[in-house]
Image 1 (cartoon, rainbow, N blue to C red):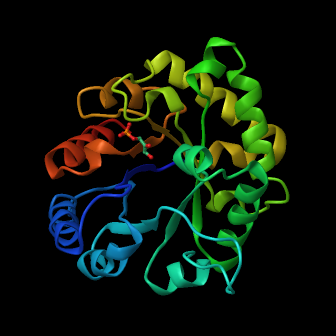
Image 2: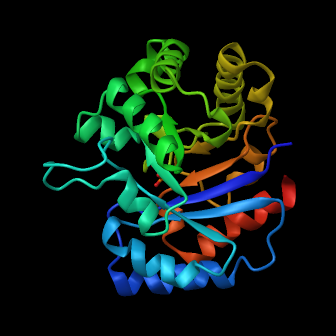
Length: 251
Ligand code: 13P
């Protein structure tokens, strides 16, 4: 039985004060949730204050990235153990913005997934095709490569969450239709079955890309869509809580 997840990726938004206000509103709006999880991913500078705000609540904390080494001379980077120490449960890995702007390769993402699991963090592994790749009809081969490379040598698959985020849908307002999204989610579940057998039924696969409270209802009705990774709409309490309400009502 899969439980739903709604995760808010705040990206490079919010000061400490803004983060506390938003985290507090999400905490207060989620006291009655059942059968699911609400996760927030503030920027690094707000992780601790967000943790202090949500620590006795239903909401858990994610980081947006990490390095794959335990420590060392990596100026500007954050180690996995530091994220555990600050109260993170999850870490987003391989977001398309990391792949595009910071040149993260499948190999780096694989090292990060393995290290996150080794220190007890649950990876939210992001995959997704670009608009060009969809037009060229190579979506499935791109997703197949991203998943297989990222999960190479990974055995604790029950701790991994997959997020399908078509790059063309991120921040564009061009949400995938529920049929387009479900097609890829079912394909991902097939890859997981090939790699891990029946455990694949229990792995959560989230949809991300221009999710709002107005379009999530249809997406979440699909069999293989187990929740959402939300960007822009996670920055406003009403918008984010509206998404959570719809998902918790339907899953
Ligand atoms: P938007 O919801 O703003 O499209 O962002 C999606 C995303 O990238 C979440 O990780």
